Image 1 (cartoon, rainbow, N blue to C red):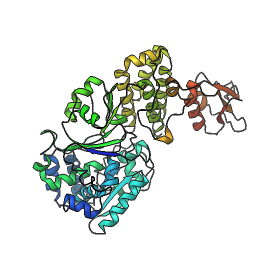
Image 2: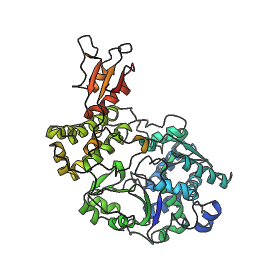
Image 3: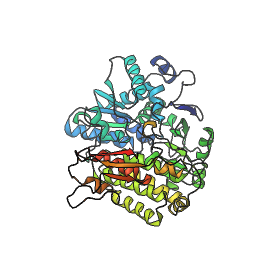
Image 4: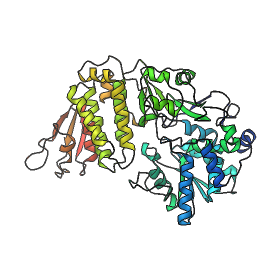
Length: 500
């Protein structure tokens, strides 16, 4: 998915995507001609506007923007320090492109919203964190067009990882540190960029703010639901970006993009949850409507699962990728998620009811114990799949399967897709991979014993604390676990090779 270009569509008159039917990139002149000059509001006016339109963060958690503004304002009053504004444009979700679309094609709208907030708070700096080179280039062009008037604007390209978008990871990365969650329960509104109170929200949120400031609360609420006014940006099937008023039926949005609910729709991305077909057909683009069917809008992704692919294999693929995206800084994430992914693969590969029970045990061991939201979001995805596709998981656990291949309908970055020898690929009927073996290099091995903990039942330690054998055959179902042991061996004494 790295470098994927979104296909744009709108339902009704566009707001955030206005003007893009005539221009592939909105320069400053075209942007001003379409949207008009950027207004200026003081912090009280801006907070009142955000409250009147019920503006929420559009990055996943959905926090009320007015509450964020108040939190920063309160911190400024207490500390007397400066403020900063941070735009989260990282979008590490493989199935999301909406923020990327805004930054690629309409960057001035996003910058207008961020500068508006910065001026209201008296901030001297706006920082934008991104992960794609083309997005960085688009922003640098836009920043150059704006000149030096107003708050300074800088863009920083960070590693393309799922956890880069976590607030503390983003701030640390922009500040020059590792783009990894800090694990500290300190709000950015109290101590963010450079240690000062920071207003942080995602790309679409600032674009919506810029539109609302021009239209006013009444004009902004002239479309959409009275309880959830305005429009929403959605990514559909990992390729289409749609701007739609709230309240539109989800099946209509899917149909507009040439797809249908299929076996179910993953709503909110890989930290979201599955809607069965009936619930998806009844739901609308609305937080309240989705909540009524146990769904969340989250990062604004709608990922329908076609009838032709195996839901179990798709779930195993994504769970494995989520485990690899761990920041590696806490046990529930670094150890719990890989263990969960392995248990899920074992269940999918005919491990029986005991394997399914192990999956649920692993979920319980991870939930609400992580240093950031990644473990909880990942277990939410797996738990939802187990519920919506319970029959398919039961059949796979008993060794029957569903007879469908795993087509990769749920998008993953091309460089990080699960290898063809993974359980997900075998579930889909891929030809068996060559036999492999785990080799122990005795010149390097120091008897740490970590490999035995990672490969119980495959690798045993002798009475001296060293592996009993130098060559161990690796069953296909344990390949990912063996590779993980190779990566984590402190002495670099392990490797996996094709059996000669």
